[in-house]
Image 1 (cartoon, rainbow over the protein chains, first blue to last red):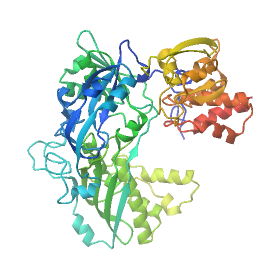
Image 2 (cartoon, each protein chain N blue to C red; image 1 turned 135 degrees about the vertical axis):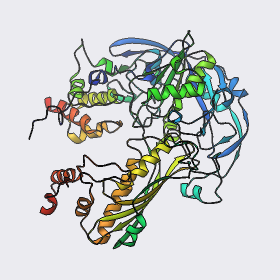
Image 3 (tube, each protein chain N blue to C red; image 1 turned 45 degrees about the vertical axis):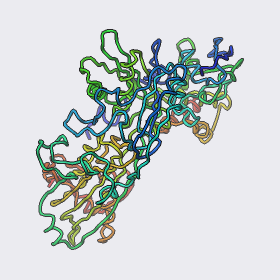
Image 4 (cartoon, rainbow over the protein chains, first blue to last red; image 1 turned 90 degrees about the vertical axis):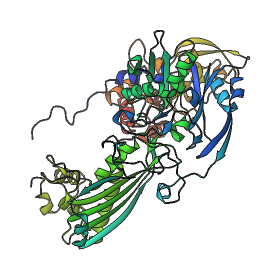
Length: 451
Length: 158
Protein backbone atom coordinates (compact mmCIF):
# COMPACT_ATOMS: atom_id res chain seq x y z
CA UNK A 1 0.00 0.00 0.00
CA UNK A 2 1.14 3.53 -0.76
CA UNK A 3 2.64 5.33 2.26
CA UNK A 4 0.35 8.22 3.18
CA UNK A 5 2.06 11.37 4.39
CA UNK A 6 -0.84 13.04 6.21
CA UNK A 7 -3.83 10.72 6.57
CA UNK A 8 -3.70 8.75 9.80
CA UNK A 9 -0.98 10.98 11.31
CA UNK A 10 -1.71 13.25 14.26
CA UNK A 11 -1.38 16.99 13.62
CA UNK A 12 -0.58 19.19 16.62
CA UNK A 13 -3.38 21.55 17.63
CA UNK A 14 -2.41 25.05 16.51
CA UNK A 15 -3.59 26.38 19.88
CA UNK A 16 -2.12 23.64 22.10
CA UNK A 17 0.46 25.93 23.73
CA UNK A 18 -1.99 28.73 24.50
CA UNK A 19 -4.63 26.27 25.76
CA UNK A 20 -2.17 24.60 28.16
CA UNK A 21 -1.01 27.95 29.53
CA UNK A 22 -4.53 29.37 29.83
CA UNK A 23 -3.73 32.21 27.45
CA UNK A 24 -6.33 31.45 24.76
CA UNK A 25 -8.75 34.34 24.42
CA UNK A 26 -12.51 33.79 24.52
CA UNK A 27 -15.27 36.38 24.23
CA UNK A 28 -15.83 36.36 27.99
CA UNK A 29 -12.30 37.81 28.33
CA UNK A 30 -13.22 40.92 26.33
CA UNK A 31 -13.89 43.96 28.46
CA UNK A 32 -14.09 47.73 27.94
CA UNK A 33 -14.23 50.67 30.35
CA UNK A 34 -17.85 51.58 31.01
CA UNK A 35 -19.11 48.27 29.68
CA UNK A 36 -22.70 47.40 30.65
CA UNK A 37 -24.23 43.96 31.22
CA UNK A 38 -27.45 42.61 29.76
CA UNK A 39 -29.96 40.16 31.22
CA UNK A 40 -33.19 38.92 29.67
CA UNK A 41 -36.58 38.77 31.28
CA UNK A 42 -38.02 35.58 29.85
CA UNK A 43 -41.41 33.95 29.46
CA UNK A 44 -42.36 31.79 32.45
CA UNK A 45 -45.01 29.93 30.39
CA UNK A 46 -44.87 27.74 27.25
CA UNK A 47 -47.67 29.63 25.50
CA UNK A 48 -49.44 32.80 26.46
CA UNK A 49 -50.76 36.22 25.58
CA UNK A 50 -48.95 39.13 27.16
CA UNK A 51 -51.52 41.46 28.73
CA UNK A 52 -49.19 43.81 30.54
CA UNK A 53 -45.49 44.21 31.24
CA UNK A 54 -44.39 46.54 34.03
CA UNK A 55 -40.69 47.27 34.02
CA UNK A 56 -40.76 50.51 36.03
CA UNK A 57 -39.46 48.69 39.14
CA UNK A 58 -36.55 47.38 37.08
CA UNK A 59 -35.65 50.92 36.04
CA UNK A 60 -35.68 51.92 39.73
CA UNK A 61 -32.96 49.37 40.59
CA UNK A 62 -29.69 51.25 41.17
CA UNK A 63 -27.38 50.61 38.23
CA UNK A 64 -30.08 49.71 35.69
CA UNK A 65 -29.59 51.90 32.62
CA UNK A 66 -32.26 50.74 30.22
CA UNK A 67 -34.98 48.13 29.59
CA UNK A 68 -35.57 47.18 25.97
CA UNK A 69 -38.82 45.77 24.58
CA UNK A 70 -39.96 44.70 21.12
CA UNK A 71 -40.78 48.38 20.36
CA UNK A 72 -37.07 49.16 20.47
CA UNK A 73 -36.17 46.64 17.77
CA UNK A 74 -36.10 48.25 14.29
CA UNK A 75 -37.03 44.98 12.53
CA UNK A 76 -38.42 42.74 15.23
CA UNK A 77 -39.67 39.79 13.16
CA UNK A 78 -36.95 37.66 11.67
CA UNK A 79 -35.94 34.23 10.45
CA UNK A 80 -32.33 33.08 10.55
CA UNK A 81 -32.19 31.91 6.92
CA UNK A 82 -33.71 35.02 5.30
CA UNK A 83 -30.49 35.43 3.27
CA UNK A 84 -31.31 32.33 1.24
CA UNK A 85 -34.97 33.24 0.80
CA UNK A 86 -36.49 31.28 3.69
CA UNK A 87 -39.61 32.91 5.11
CA UNK A 88 -41.89 34.24 6.27
CA UNK A 89 -40.05 35.73 9.24
CA UNK A 90 -41.76 34.07 12.21
CA UNK A 91 -39.57 34.86 15.23
CA UNK A 92 -39.70 38.06 17.25
CA UNK A 93 -36.34 39.23 18.60
CA UNK A 94 -38.32 40.29 21.70
CA UNK A 95 -41.83 38.94 22.24
CA UNK A 96 -44.75 41.12 21.12
CA UNK A 97 -48.29 39.97 21.95
CA UNK A 98 -47.63 36.23 22.31
CA UNK A 99 -44.96 34.04 23.88
CA UNK A 100 -44.41 30.57 22.47
CA UNK A 101 -41.91 28.80 24.71
CA UNK A 102 -40.64 28.88 28.28
CA UNK A 103 -37.66 31.22 28.25
CA UNK A 104 -38.62 33.28 25.21
CA UNK A 105 -37.08 36.74 25.73
CA UNK A 106 -39.60 39.49 26.47
CA UNK A 107 -37.41 42.36 27.75
CA UNK A 108 -33.69 42.98 27.95
CA UNK A 109 -32.39 44.75 31.04
CA UNK A 110 -29.13 46.66 30.60
CA UNK A 111 -27.22 47.67 33.73
CA UNK A 112 -23.83 48.72 35.02
CA UNK A 113 -22.90 45.21 36.12
CA UNK A 114 -24.24 41.67 36.04
CA UNK A 115 -25.70 41.92 39.55
CA UNK A 116 -27.80 44.99 38.81
CA UNK A 117 -28.94 43.47 35.50
CA UNK A 118 -30.04 40.32 37.32
CA UNK A 119 -31.85 42.29 40.01
CA UNK A 120 -33.55 44.41 37.34
CA UNK A 121 -34.80 41.35 35.46
CA UNK A 122 -36.18 39.93 38.72
CA UNK A 123 -38.21 43.11 39.34
CA UNK A 124 -40.11 42.98 36.03
CA UNK A 125 -43.78 42.10 36.45
CA UNK A 126 -45.67 40.39 33.68
CA UNK A 127 -49.36 39.66 33.41
CA UNK A 128 -49.51 36.80 30.91
CA UNK A 129 -52.69 34.90 30.08
CA UNK A 130 -51.62 31.29 29.82
CA UNK A 131 -52.87 29.40 26.76
CA UNK A 132 -52.94 25.65 26.23
CA UNK A 133 -49.50 24.71 24.89
CA UNK A 134 -48.78 22.47 21.91
CA UNK A 135 -46.11 20.04 23.06
CA UNK A 136 -46.37 17.08 20.66
CA UNK A 137 -45.65 17.70 16.96
CA UNK A 138 -48.04 14.95 15.87
CA UNK A 139 -50.81 16.58 17.94
CA UNK A 140 -49.91 19.87 16.26
CA UNK A 141 -50.65 18.34 12.83
CA UNK A 142 -54.10 17.01 13.82
CA UNK A 143 -57.17 18.92 12.62
CA UNK A 144 -58.52 21.11 15.39
CA UNK A 145 -55.15 21.66 17.07
CA UNK A 146 -54.58 25.26 18.21
CA UNK A 147 -52.68 27.12 15.48
CA UNK A 148 -49.53 28.92 16.60
CA UNK A 149 -48.35 30.22 13.21
CA UNK A 150 -49.60 33.26 11.30
CA UNK A 151 -50.00 31.29 8.03
CA UNK A 152 -52.76 29.11 9.49
CA UNK A 153 -50.90 25.80 9.80
CA UNK A 154 -48.49 24.41 12.42
CA UNK A 155 -46.05 23.18 9.75
CA UNK A 156 -43.67 25.05 7.46
CA UNK A 157 -44.99 25.41 3.89
CA UNK A 158 -42.64 24.04 1.23
CA UNK A 159 -42.84 24.70 -2.50
CA UNK A 160 -44.37 28.16 -2.37
CA UNK A 161 -41.16 30.10 -2.77
CA UNK A 162 -40.62 30.53 0.97
CA UNK A 163 -38.27 27.58 1.42
CA UNK A 164 -35.22 29.04 -0.28
CA UNK A 165 -35.39 26.30 -2.90
CA UNK A 166 -38.49 26.88 -5.05
CA UNK A 167 -39.64 29.94 -7.01
CA UNK A 168 -42.42 32.03 -5.44
CA UNK A 169 -46.04 31.56 -6.54
CA UNK A 170 -46.30 27.80 -6.07
CA UNK A 171 -49.23 26.42 -4.14
CA UNK A 172 -47.09 24.87 -1.46
CA UNK A 173 -47.78 22.05 0.94
CA UNK A 174 -47.11 21.58 4.67
CA UNK A 175 -44.33 19.06 4.03
CA UNK A 176 -41.24 18.61 1.89
CA UNK A 177 -41.68 15.87 -0.67
CA UNK A 178 -39.26 13.55 -2.51
CA UNK A 179 -40.53 11.08 -5.10
CA UNK A 180 -38.75 8.58 -7.30
CA UNK A 181 -40.04 5.71 -9.44
CA UNK A 182 -43.37 3.94 -9.02
CA UNK A 183 -43.49 3.19 -5.32
CA UNK A 184 -47.03 1.76 -5.39
CA UNK A 185 -46.04 -0.83 -7.95
CA UNK A 186 -43.02 -1.78 -5.83
CA UNK A 187 -45.33 -2.47 -2.89
CA UNK A 188 -47.69 -4.55 -5.08
CA UNK A 189 -44.84 -6.77 -6.27
CA UNK A 190 -43.16 -7.08 -2.86
CA UNK A 191 -42.77 -10.38 -1.01
CA UNK A 192 -42.40 -8.57 2.32
CA UNK A 193 -43.68 -5.25 3.61
CA UNK A 194 -41.95 -4.12 6.80
CA UNK A 195 -43.03 -1.11 8.83
CA UNK A 196 -41.29 0.70 11.64
CA UNK A 197 -41.57 3.81 13.84
CA UNK A 198 -38.45 5.49 15.24
CA UNK A 199 -38.27 8.31 17.76
CA UNK A 200 -35.20 10.34 18.58
CA UNK A 201 -35.22 12.73 21.53
CA UNK A 202 -33.95 16.34 21.36
CA UNK A 203 -30.31 16.89 22.30
CA UNK A 204 -28.54 19.85 23.88
CA UNK A 205 -25.02 20.71 22.68
CA UNK A 206 -23.93 21.78 26.19
CA UNK A 207 -20.67 23.54 25.32
CA UNK A 208 -18.64 24.39 28.43
CA UNK A 209 -18.49 28.04 27.31
CA UNK A 210 -22.05 29.38 27.33
CA UNK A 211 -23.23 31.84 24.65
CA UNK A 212 -21.46 35.17 25.14
CA UNK A 213 -21.27 38.41 23.20
CA UNK A 214 -19.79 41.88 23.60
CA UNK A 215 -21.02 44.64 21.29
CA UNK A 216 -19.28 48.01 21.10
CA UNK A 217 -20.52 51.11 19.29
CA UNK A 218 -17.63 52.85 17.54
CA UNK A 219 -17.29 56.66 17.37
CA UNK A 220 -17.74 56.58 13.58
CA UNK A 221 -21.17 54.95 13.86
CA UNK A 222 -19.95 51.45 13.15
CA UNK A 223 -20.54 48.51 15.45
CA UNK A 224 -18.00 45.91 16.56
CA UNK A 225 -19.36 42.59 17.79
CA UNK A 226 -17.20 40.08 19.66
CA UNK A 227 -19.07 36.85 19.42
CA UNK A 228 -18.80 33.22 20.47
CA UNK A 229 -20.61 32.37 17.23
CA UNK A 230 -19.49 29.57 14.94
CA UNK A 231 -20.85 31.57 12.01
CA UNK A 232 -19.63 35.20 12.07
CA UNK A 233 -20.95 36.09 8.60
CA UNK A 234 -24.32 34.70 9.59
CA UNK A 235 -24.23 36.98 12.64
CA UNK A 236 -23.41 40.01 10.51
CA UNK A 237 -26.29 39.50 8.06
CA UNK A 238 -28.81 38.81 10.81
CA UNK A 239 -27.76 41.72 13.02
CA UNK A 240 -27.86 44.05 9.99
CA UNK A 241 -31.35 42.78 9.14
CA UNK A 242 -32.71 43.20 12.67
CA UNK A 243 -31.11 46.62 13.26
CA UNK A 244 -31.77 47.84 9.69
CA UNK A 245 -28.09 48.67 9.37
CA UNK A 246 -25.76 48.27 6.43
CA UNK A 247 -23.68 45.11 6.74
CA UNK A 248 -20.57 47.13 5.94
CA UNK A 249 -21.05 49.07 9.19
CA UNK A 250 -20.87 45.90 11.27
CA UNK A 251 -17.62 44.14 12.11
CA UNK A 252 -17.86 40.72 13.74
CA UNK A 253 -14.81 39.43 15.58
CA UNK A 254 -14.87 35.74 16.26
CA UNK A 255 -12.49 34.71 19.03
CA UNK A 256 -11.90 31.13 20.12
CA UNK A 257 -15.14 29.25 20.58
CA UNK A 258 -15.33 27.27 23.82
CA UNK A 259 -17.28 24.46 22.20
CA UNK A 260 -20.18 24.93 19.82
CA UNK A 261 -21.22 21.68 18.09
CA UNK A 262 -23.75 23.59 15.99
CA UNK A 263 -25.41 25.28 18.95
CA UNK A 264 -23.63 28.58 18.30
CA UNK A 265 -24.77 28.99 14.70
CA UNK A 266 -27.99 30.90 15.38
CA UNK A 267 -27.53 34.64 16.09
CA UNK A 268 -29.68 34.63 19.24
CA UNK A 269 -27.37 36.50 21.57
CA UNK A 270 -25.73 38.88 19.09
CA UNK A 271 -28.89 40.60 17.79
CA UNK A 272 -29.97 41.79 21.23
CA UNK A 273 -26.50 42.63 22.52
CA UNK A 274 -25.92 44.76 19.42
CA UNK A 275 -29.26 46.50 19.91
CA UNK A 276 -28.46 47.22 23.56
CA UNK A 277 -25.10 48.72 22.60
CA UNK A 278 -26.69 51.01 20.03
CA UNK A 279 -29.52 52.09 22.36
CA UNK A 280 -27.22 52.91 25.28
CA UNK A 281 -24.24 53.99 23.17
CA UNK A 282 -22.04 51.94 25.51
CA UNK A 283 -20.23 48.62 25.13
CA UNK A 284 -22.56 45.85 26.32
CA UNK A 285 -21.84 42.32 27.37
CA UNK A 286 -24.33 39.46 27.57
CA UNK A 287 -23.33 36.03 28.84
CA UNK A 288 -25.91 33.29 29.17
CA UNK A 289 -26.09 31.27 32.36
CA UNK A 290 -25.81 27.50 32.30
CA UNK A 291 -29.55 27.35 32.87
CA UNK A 292 -30.18 29.53 29.81
CA UNK A 293 -27.78 27.39 27.79
CA UNK A 294 -29.90 24.34 28.57
CA UNK A 295 -33.37 25.85 28.45
CA UNK A 296 -33.33 28.50 25.71
CA UNK A 297 -30.41 27.78 23.40
CA UNK A 298 -31.27 25.62 20.40
CA UNK A 299 -31.35 21.83 20.54
CA UNK A 300 -31.18 19.06 17.96
CA UNK A 301 -34.79 18.49 16.93
CA UNK A 302 -36.73 15.65 18.44
CA UNK A 303 -37.71 13.58 15.40
CA UNK A 304 -40.18 10.83 14.67
CA UNK A 305 -39.77 8.74 11.52
CA UNK A 306 -42.22 6.25 10.02
CA UNK A 307 -40.69 3.89 7.46
CA UNK A 308 -42.31 1.21 5.33
CA UNK A 309 -40.28 -0.93 2.93
CA UNK A 310 -41.21 -3.20 0.04
CA UNK A 311 -38.65 -6.03 -0.04
CA UNK A 312 -38.20 -8.96 -2.46
CA UNK A 313 -37.80 -12.62 -1.44
CA UNK A 314 -34.05 -12.44 -2.04
CA UNK A 315 -33.59 -9.40 0.23
CA UNK A 316 -33.56 -6.47 -2.19
CA UNK A 317 -35.33 -3.28 -1.25
CA UNK A 318 -37.77 -2.43 -4.05
CA UNK A 319 -39.34 0.66 -2.59
CA UNK A 320 -39.67 2.75 0.56
CA UNK A 321 -42.24 5.12 1.98
CA UNK A 322 -41.09 7.53 4.67
CA UNK A 323 -42.74 10.16 6.82
CA UNK A 324 -40.50 12.30 8.99
CA UNK A 325 -41.78 14.65 11.68
CA UNK A 326 -39.25 17.19 12.90
CA UNK A 327 -40.05 19.16 16.05
CA UNK A 328 -38.87 22.68 15.22
CA UNK A 329 -39.98 24.06 18.57
CA UNK A 330 -41.51 27.51 18.54
CA UNK A 331 -39.68 29.12 15.60
CA UNK A 332 -38.10 28.24 12.27
CA UNK A 333 -34.41 29.10 12.79
CA UNK A 334 -32.62 26.66 10.43
CA UNK A 335 -35.23 23.89 10.75
CA UNK A 336 -36.87 24.29 7.29
CA UNK A 337 -33.47 23.50 5.78
CA UNK A 338 -32.72 20.70 8.26
CA UNK A 339 -35.95 18.94 7.27
CA UNK A 340 -34.96 18.98 3.57
CA UNK A 341 -31.65 17.35 4.51
CA UNK A 342 -33.37 14.78 6.74
CA UNK A 343 -35.97 13.89 4.12
CA UNK A 344 -33.59 13.32 1.21
CA UNK A 345 -31.48 11.15 3.52
CA UNK A 346 -34.27 8.66 4.24
CA UNK A 347 -32.69 6.26 1.73
CA UNK A 348 -29.51 6.17 3.76
CA UNK A 349 -26.52 4.86 1.75
CA UNK A 350 -28.74 2.26 0.06
CA UNK A 351 -30.06 1.68 -3.45
CA UNK A 352 -33.80 2.25 -3.22
CA UNK A 353 -35.24 2.35 -6.74
CA UNK A 354 -38.63 3.77 -5.86
CA UNK A 355 -39.45 6.01 -2.95
CA UNK A 356 -41.94 8.49 -1.58
CA UNK A 357 -40.79 10.63 1.34
CA UNK A 358 -42.53 13.41 3.24
CA UNK A 359 -40.74 15.64 5.74
CA UNK A 360 -42.73 17.84 8.11
CA UNK A 361 -41.18 20.83 9.91
CA UNK A 362 -43.66 21.19 12.77
CA UNK A 363 -43.93 24.00 15.34
CA UNK A 364 -44.63 23.39 19.03
CA UNK A 365 -44.40 25.47 22.22
CA UNK A 366 -40.86 24.37 23.04
CA UNK A 367 -37.40 25.88 22.79
CA UNK A 368 -36.51 26.12 19.08
CA UNK A 369 -34.36 23.43 17.52
CA UNK A 370 -31.66 24.11 14.95
CA UNK A 371 -28.21 22.99 13.84
CA UNK A 372 -26.22 20.29 15.61
CA UNK A 373 -23.48 18.13 14.09
CA UNK A 374 -24.83 16.75 10.80
CA UNK A 375 -28.44 17.51 11.75
CA UNK A 376 -31.04 16.12 9.40
CA UNK A 377 -28.81 13.34 8.08
CA UNK A 378 -28.17 12.14 11.63
CA UNK A 379 -31.84 11.79 12.62
CA UNK A 380 -32.62 9.93 9.38
CA UNK A 381 -29.62 7.66 9.75
CA UNK A 382 -30.76 6.67 13.24
CA UNK A 383 -34.16 5.62 11.88
CA UNK A 384 -32.86 4.05 8.64
CA UNK A 385 -30.22 1.85 10.30
CA UNK A 386 -32.65 0.61 12.95
CA UNK A 387 -35.10 -0.13 10.13
CA UNK A 388 -32.44 -2.05 8.18
CA UNK A 389 -31.87 -4.22 11.27
CA UNK A 390 -35.61 -4.75 11.68
CA UNK A 391 -36.10 -5.77 8.04
CA UNK A 392 -33.16 -8.19 8.14
CA UNK A 393 -34.50 -9.78 11.30
CA UNK A 394 -38.06 -10.08 10.07
CA UNK A 395 -37.18 -11.65 6.70
CA UNK A 396 -34.59 -13.92 8.31
CA UNK A 397 -31.43 -12.65 6.63
CA UNK A 398 -28.17 -11.59 8.29
CA UNK A 399 -28.11 -7.79 8.59
CA UNK A 400 -24.56 -7.53 7.16
CA UNK A 401 -25.68 -9.50 4.14
CA UNK A 402 -28.79 -7.32 3.82
CA UNK A 403 -26.69 -4.14 3.89
CA UNK A 404 -24.14 -5.48 1.40
CA UNK A 405 -26.93 -6.45 -1.01
CA UNK A 406 -28.59 -3.06 -0.87
CA UNK A 407 -25.52 -0.80 -0.64
CA UNK A 408 -25.02 1.83 -3.32
CA UNK A 409 -22.73 0.62 -6.13
CA UNK A 410 -20.95 2.89 -8.52
CA UNK A 411 -23.45 4.30 -11.03
CA UNK A 412 -26.55 3.85 -8.84
CA UNK A 413 -28.90 6.80 -8.71
CA UNK A 414 -30.02 8.38 -5.44
CA UNK A 415 -33.58 9.38 -4.59
CA UNK A 416 -32.79 12.93 -5.72
CA UNK A 417 -31.33 11.77 -9.04
CA UNK A 418 -27.66 12.00 -8.10
CA UNK A 419 -25.46 9.43 -9.83
CA UNK A 420 -23.18 7.76 -7.26
CA UNK A 421 -19.74 8.19 -8.75
CA UNK A 422 -17.85 7.41 -5.54
CA UNK A 423 -19.69 4.60 -3.80
CA UNK A 424 -17.55 2.90 -1.15
CA UNK A 425 -19.98 1.54 1.44
CA UNK A 426 -19.10 -2.10 0.75
CA UNK A 427 -15.38 -1.40 1.19
CA UNK A 428 -16.05 0.59 4.36
CA UNK A 429 -18.17 -2.23 5.81
CA UNK A 430 -15.46 -4.79 5.04
CA UNK A 431 -12.87 -2.66 6.81
CA UNK A 432 -15.20 -2.04 9.77
CA UNK A 433 -15.78 -5.78 10.15
CA UNK A 434 -12.03 -6.41 9.99
CA UNK A 435 -11.33 -3.81 12.70
CA UNK A 436 -14.08 -5.36 14.86
CA UNK A 437 -12.51 -8.83 14.41
CA UNK A 438 -15.70 -10.03 12.78
CA UNK A 439 -15.38 -12.69 10.09
CA UNK A 440 -17.64 -12.00 7.16
CA UNK A 441 -18.63 -14.85 4.84
CA UNK A 442 -16.47 -15.29 1.75
CA UNK A 443 -19.15 -14.23 -0.75
CA UNK A 444 -19.48 -10.83 0.97
CA UNK A 445 -15.72 -10.34 1.04
CA UNK A 446 -15.68 -10.89 -2.72
CA UNK A 447 -18.17 -8.06 -3.30
CA UNK A 448 -17.13 -4.56 -4.29
CA UNK A 449 -18.74 -1.22 -5.11
CA UNK A 450 -17.70 -1.60 -8.75
CA UNK A 451 -20.71 -2.76 -10.73
CA UNK B 1 -22.82 43.13 44.69
CA UNK B 2 -23.64 46.78 44.99
CA UNK B 3 -23.39 46.62 48.79
CA UNK B 4 -21.52 49.52 50.34
CA UNK B 5 -19.77 47.14 52.75
CA UNK B 6 -16.43 46.11 51.37
CA UNK B 7 -13.57 44.13 52.85
CA UNK B 8 -9.87 44.32 52.20
CA UNK B 9 -8.75 40.82 51.29
CA UNK B 10 -5.08 39.84 51.00
CA UNK B 11 -3.88 36.59 49.49
CA UNK B 12 -0.94 35.19 47.57
CA UNK B 13 -1.69 34.57 43.89
CA UNK B 14 0.93 32.54 42.00
CA UNK B 15 3.65 33.61 44.51
CA UNK B 16 2.72 37.32 44.30
CA UNK B 17 0.85 39.17 47.06
CA UNK B 18 -2.55 40.54 46.02
CA UNK B 19 -4.83 42.98 47.81
CA UNK B 20 -8.42 43.50 46.71
CA UNK B 21 -11.41 45.45 47.97
CA UNK B 22 -14.50 43.22 47.67
CA UNK B 23 -18.09 43.05 48.88
CA UNK B 24 -18.66 40.06 51.20
CA UNK B 25 -20.80 38.17 48.68
CA UNK B 26 -18.35 38.32 45.76
CA UNK B 27 -17.16 34.98 44.39
CA UNK B 28 -13.49 34.30 43.72
CA UNK B 29 -14.20 33.62 40.02
CA UNK B 30 -15.38 37.21 39.52
CA UNK B 31 -12.66 38.72 41.71
CA UNK B 32 -9.91 36.96 39.79
CA UNK B 33 -11.36 37.57 36.33
CA UNK B 34 -12.61 41.11 36.76
CA UNK B 35 -10.45 42.72 39.46
CA UNK B 36 -7.15 40.86 39.15
CA UNK B 37 -7.46 40.18 35.39
CA UNK B 38 -6.67 36.46 35.56
CA UNK B 39 -8.61 35.05 32.60
CA UNK B 40 -7.52 31.40 32.64
CA UNK B 41 -10.27 30.45 35.09
CA UNK B 42 -13.55 30.38 33.26
CA UNK B 43 -17.27 30.59 33.79
CA UNK B 44 -18.98 27.39 32.70
CA UNK B 45 -21.94 26.87 34.99
CA UNK B 46 -21.68 29.03 38.12
CA UNK B 47 -22.95 26.16 40.25
CA UNK B 48 -20.04 23.81 40.76
CA UNK B 49 -20.87 21.29 38.05
CA UNK B 50 -18.27 21.74 35.32
CA UNK B 51 -14.93 22.64 36.95
CA UNK B 52 -13.89 25.21 34.32
CA UNK B 53 -13.28 27.69 37.17
CA UNK B 54 -10.99 25.38 39.20
CA UNK B 55 -8.21 27.04 41.23
CA UNK B 56 -5.90 25.64 43.89
CA UNK B 57 -6.28 27.09 47.37
CA UNK B 58 -3.36 26.04 49.58
CA UNK B 59 -2.69 23.35 46.97
CA UNK B 60 -6.18 21.85 47.00
CA UNK B 61 -8.65 22.14 44.09
CA UNK B 62 -11.48 24.57 44.73
CA UNK B 63 -14.34 25.72 42.52
CA UNK B 64 -13.92 29.48 42.35
CA UNK B 65 -17.58 29.95 41.35
CA UNK B 66 -18.62 28.58 44.76
CA UNK B 67 -15.83 30.18 46.76
CA UNK B 68 -16.35 33.52 48.45
CA UNK B 69 -13.37 35.78 47.96
CA UNK B 70 -13.37 36.69 51.66
CA UNK B 71 -12.69 33.01 52.44
CA UNK B 72 -9.26 33.05 50.75
CA UNK B 73 -7.95 35.86 52.97
CA UNK B 74 -4.38 34.91 53.93
CA UNK B 75 -4.38 31.85 51.68
CA UNK B 76 -2.27 30.73 48.79
CA UNK B 77 -4.11 30.71 45.42
CA UNK B 78 -2.73 29.07 42.29
CA UNK B 79 -4.01 29.34 38.71
CA UNK B 80 -2.46 27.82 35.60
CA UNK B 81 -0.46 31.04 35.07
CA UNK B 82 1.51 30.08 38.17
CA UNK B 83 2.66 26.72 36.83
CA UNK B 84 5.32 27.70 34.33
CA UNK B 85 8.50 29.05 35.86
CA UNK B 86 10.88 31.37 33.97
CA UNK B 87 9.23 30.53 30.66
CA UNK B 88 9.63 26.79 31.24
CA UNK B 89 6.33 24.93 31.06
CA UNK B 90 5.32 22.55 33.83
CA UNK B 91 5.59 18.84 32.81
CA UNK B 92 1.78 18.54 32.98
CA UNK B 93 1.40 21.42 30.51
CA UNK B 94 3.95 19.80 28.19
CA UNK B 95 2.09 16.51 28.37
CA UNK B 96 -1.22 18.18 27.44
CA UNK B 97 0.46 19.70 24.38
CA UNK B 98 2.18 16.43 23.35
CA UNK B 99 -0.99 14.37 23.70
CA UNK B 100 -3.36 16.85 22.05
CA UNK B 101 -5.38 16.85 25.26
CA UNK B 102 -7.21 20.07 24.37
CA UNK B 103 -9.51 20.96 21.53
CA UNK B 104 -11.32 24.21 22.34
CA UNK B 105 -9.17 24.73 25.44
CA UNK B 106 -11.91 26.16 27.66
CA UNK B 107 -11.71 23.37 30.25
CA UNK B 108 -7.95 22.76 29.95
CA UNK B 109 -6.57 24.92 32.82
CA UNK B 110 -9.02 23.28 35.24
CA UNK B 111 -7.87 19.78 34.29
CA UNK B 112 -4.19 20.75 34.55
CA UNK B 113 -4.73 22.15 38.06
CA UNK B 114 -6.63 19.04 39.20
CA UNK B 115 -3.76 16.90 38.04
CA UNK B 116 -1.18 19.11 39.72
CA UNK B 117 -3.03 18.86 43.04
CA UNK B 118 -3.20 15.08 42.71
CA UNK B 119 0.48 14.62 41.84
CA UNK B 120 1.63 16.97 44.60
CA UNK B 121 -0.30 14.86 47.09
CA UNK B 122 0.37 11.44 45.55
CA UNK B 123 3.35 11.30 43.16
CA UNK B 124 2.51 7.82 41.93
CA UNK B 125 -1.27 7.44 41.55
CA UNK B 126 -2.92 4.50 39.82
CA UNK B 127 -4.92 4.97 36.64
CA UNK B 128 -8.13 4.66 38.66
CA UNK B 129 -6.95 7.29 41.12
CA UNK B 130 -6.21 9.65 38.21
CA UNK B 131 -9.66 9.03 36.70
CA UNK B 132 -11.25 9.58 40.09
CA UNK B 133 -9.50 12.89 40.63
CA UNK B 134 -10.26 14.19 37.10
CA UNK B 135 -13.90 13.13 37.28
CA UNK B 136 -15.03 16.37 38.89
CA UNK B 137 -14.44 18.34 35.67
CA UNK B 138 -16.20 18.27 32.31
CA UNK B 139 -14.82 18.40 28.75
CA UNK B 140 -17.21 18.42 25.79
CA UNK B 141 -14.79 18.35 22.80
CA UNK B 142 -11.89 15.93 22.92
CA UNK B 143 -13.41 13.39 25.20
CA UNK B 144 -11.40 12.26 28.13
CA UNK B 145 -9.09 9.75 26.46
CA UNK B 146 -6.37 12.20 25.48
CA UNK B 147 -6.59 14.00 28.83
CA UNK B 148 -6.09 10.69 30.63
CA UNK B 149 -3.22 9.72 28.30
CA UNK B 150 -1.51 13.04 29.00
CA UNK B 151 -2.01 12.51 32.72
CA UNK B 152 -0.67 8.96 32.69
CA UNK B 153 2.40 10.00 30.67
CA UNK B 154 3.36 12.38 33.49
CA UNK B 155 2.83 9.65 36.09
CA UNK B 156 5.01 7.20 34.14
CA UNK B 157 7.79 9.75 33.71
CA UNK B 158 8.17 10.09 37.47
